[in-house]
Length: 139
Image (cartoon, rainbow, N blue to C red; front, side, top):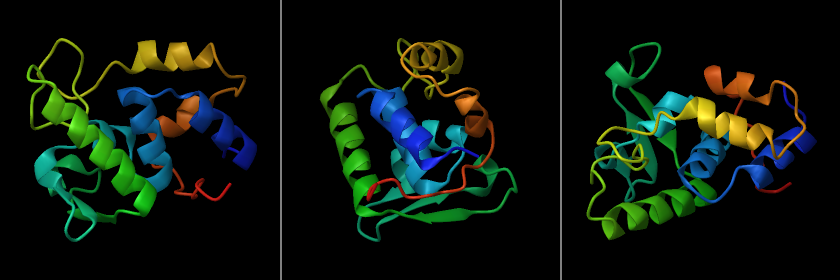
């Protein structure tokens, strides 16, 4: 398990792009990396402030409703603005793989870049399982 200091280090070093937003949303929501990286607009309900993952996108094959805190809403709103501003982007996915019409999946390169900026051994291991969902916002 990562310490609060390690989470803060990862949060601050993860960058301002899609990868950084995916990392932050994983930390804030407790969702798995693939659940966040594959977010589509149809899964986001801004009115009810929730993300609804369909059964086919969750490990247990059950629908999963994730409440959106204010920081999660802010990140989602920023990603929606990016998608709307990029006519080449697939309007369905919040995190599009660069140069492709599929969700972000460039994990090895993104993880390697972040590894070069931080000294947190094996931090990326938690990306492959469900994060424990600790809130970092107040820290």
